Length: 94
Image (cartoon, rainbow, N blue to C red; front, side, top):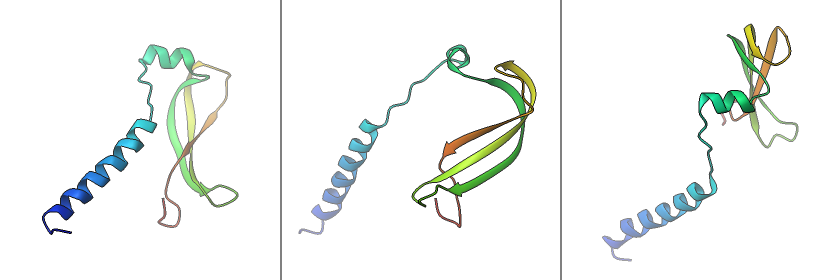
């Protein structure tokens, strides 16, 4: 392949792959009011602990954030809440 065409072809291929990835991603942008309406709990607090770990079959990493609650705006009274999200770093691997 011509040396000048090769970088262009590689760039186009990467662009096409990125487009298919971006099309598959959907994010709903919500106002604070909409988030509050849809949320199960609304609290104010301080992050007490952050812990990343593998799932049982070692295929995904999750991160658990523990928040010590100072004030509850919506939901049942409790002292702490755990937030679980996909992603994180364990053993220097994402």
